[in-house]
Structure formats: structure tokens, C-alpha cells
Figure 1 (cartoon, rainbow, N blue to C red):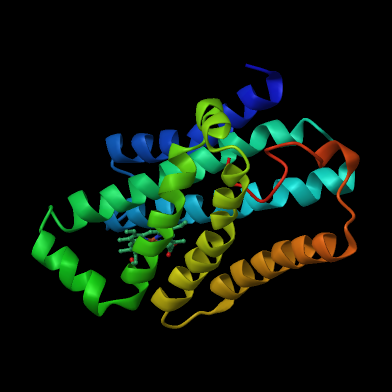
Figure 2 (figure 1 turned 90 degrees about the vertical axis):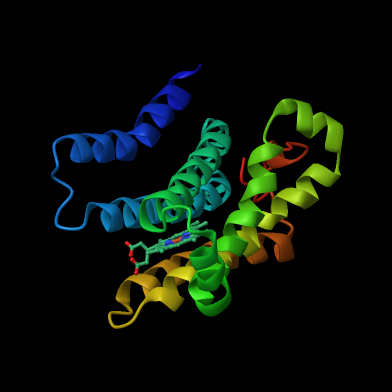
Length: 206
Ligand code: HEM
């Protein structure tokens, strides 16, 4: 594993280490389950936005090594989304499927959260070199699902917010900026030579 990947891997594990440490030392506050669910949700979304920022950052800086981090960031985003979902299903709802189905039907933010997760799932599954070869050009098309996934992830945050809109608004602005940069690049056709022909150069999760 190269140095940027090693550093990325260690940093990606930090939130998990922090959570496990907090759970063991009982320092996650008055409602540890809510803390775990919320923290994993936050990291899933932040890492998703970070994944989307890699291509524009690489174009701006010309740092090719950033491209190698993208798959790892995308997979860590999925990993924390999975922990978030497990936290909700196991710790919060105790596998009560009747309750969970009720939430999915009645709470729009849960419905949107589930849709976000379902969009991330095929991206994580097809993140290996084997799948890139097997799917050919369709792989890149499939990985454009990262855009609706990020939009729905931010909607999920908006829909659960009751009072202070600053944080969801900030996430929305970051996403709008990242998507705006993509649209600008696509409309001016100003992809860097280094990004052409690279299966990891588009807005893919991995
Ligand atoms: C089936 C899938 C999902 C379910 C059931 C779910 C459920 C939840 C629940 C119950 C909360 C806590 C709400 C509260 O405490 O009031 C939450 C918060 C959150 N979720 Fe999800 N979620 C799902 C998928 C996702 C995904 C895929 C992402 C990101 C990509 C995400 C990002 C967030 C964020 C950022 C928060 C807010 C955390 C905070 O307030 O600090 N969720 N979600």
C-alpha cells in the first residue's frame, strides 16, 4: 500500500477507534446509541462529499496521487453508512422489523436514508478491479449514482432537521459547489489530460 493510501486508511479508521474507545470508557454522553448513529451518519456523508471533491481538487492542484485515495474514501463512506444503518436497526430498533417498516413508510427522512444506502450499495460492491473489467464502459455510468446518492444524503439531513438549518445548509452548499464544478468542467470540456481514459476519473464512489 502506498503512503497516501496508508495515511487515508489510518484516518478513515479514526472515527471508529474514537467510537469504540468512547463505548468502552462510557464517555459517549447521556444517549450513547443516538451518538453512535449520528456520528456514523455524519462521517458517511462527510466522506461521500470528500470523495466527490477529489476529482475537482486533482484538477485544481494537478496532484495525481489524490486519485488513488478516492476509492478508499468512497468505501469508508459506505462502511460508516453501514454502521449507521446497523446502529439504527440493531441498537435503536432491536431488529423490530414491524417498527422499521413503519418508520420507512411514515418518516420521509428514513425513506430517503434507505434510498441513499441502496444507491451506495452497488457502488461499493463493484469497487474492485474485477468488476471494473467485467462491467467495461457501463462501470463509469453506474458509478454516476454517486451524484443522486450525495443529493439524497443531504436531503436526509435536511428532512430530519427540526430547528437549526445551518448545518444542513452548509452541507447543501458544499454539494452544490462540487456539482457546479462538475457541470462547469463538463460544459467547457476542460478535463485534464491525466484524467482522460482513467476509469477512476469521473464522479465515481470508488
Ligand atoms: C437505511 C438507511 C438509513 C437509516 C435508517 C438512517 C437513519 C437515521 C437516523 C435514525 C438518524 C438519527 C436521527 C435523529 O437522531 O434524530 C440519522 C441521522 C443521520 N443520517 Fe441517516 N440513515 C440512513 C442512511 C444514511 C446514509 C446513507 C447517510 C449518508 C450518506 C446518512 C446520514 C445521516 C446524517 C448526516 C445524519 C445526521 C447526524 C447528526 O445529526 O449529527 N444516513 N439517520
